[in-house]
Image (cartoon, rainbow, N blue to C red; front, side, top):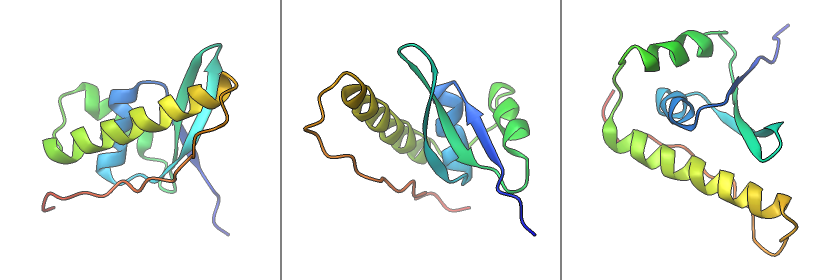
Length: 102
C-alpha cells in the first residue's frame, strides 16, 4: 500500500528548486492571509531534505530553475487573482520540464 505524501514549501525559490529536482507540483495552499505555500508530491519523504539542501547551496540547472520559478510565479499570481474575486482568467495546469541534461 502506497501512502500519498505531500510536502509544503512556503518559500518560492526553494519551491522552484524542488520543481527543478523533479518533485511534482500539486498546487497552492493558503498559509496565512494573502500568503500561499507550494505543495509537492513527496513519495520518498525526501523533499524536506532537498529543500534544506537548497539553502546549503545545492546546484541545479539555472535555465530550468528560472523557468520553474516563472511558472510558480504565474500560478501564484493566478491564484491571488482568483482569491481577490476576479474569476475571469483561465487557470492552466503547467508542466515543470527540465531542459538540462541530468
